[in-house]
Length: 189
Ligand SMILES: CC(C)(COP(=O)(O)OP(=O)(O)OC[C@H]1O[C@@H](n2cnc3c(N)ncnc32)[C@H](O)[C@@H]1OP(=O)(O)O)[C@@H](O)C(=O)NCCC(=O)NCCS
Image (cartoon, rainbow, N blue to C red):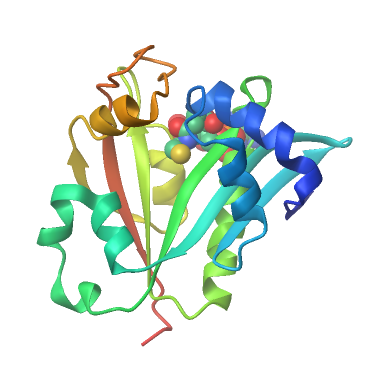
């Protein structure tokens, strides 16, 4: 079952994030803030009262988009940059033991459903590329996203500043790349 996260889910979400994205990639306080924020939607996949995965979607402005897309922002089409707000599928993470059962895909599709209910034309997402694969890349493509560009060493500085350890690289700096994807809601002006 997929539902909106509540404050009582905080610890379980934090644990999945630590396991899948690296320790303290997202801090407990930030998750709490996001659960209670109108500009964010955290969805959780729950089975037998256990949270097996979650997604974090945010509505962001141009300044935040600039931060997230780094060097790629400049290359975006003017018609995209002229929008006032954007969707940002920031995280999808599924517990190790529950991967490969369609949970990540379901969370992504449910998020797209939420996007359709908002006044948002463009939604971005980043797929983390480690040594072996582009995590979530295929899921994003199947959900209607298009691949834009790869950004090398995407997490390098952030991992040092925030002191999070990457599941692939270990202690900072993280040398993984990110692939940027965009979803365009065709029915919105
Ligand atoms: C990326 C991630 C969220 C995917 O979650 P998931 O629940 O395993 O995703 P799914 O099960 O929907 O899809 C994973 C694969 O299993 C396959 N699959 C989906 N349903 C399936 C089923 N019922 N039976 C068998 N395989 C299935 C999919 O085709 C997919 O393969 P592909 O990616 O090669 O196309 C998860 O691996 C994860 O948490 N990764 C670490 C965090 C991360 O990088 N997140 C993305 C950036 S924030």
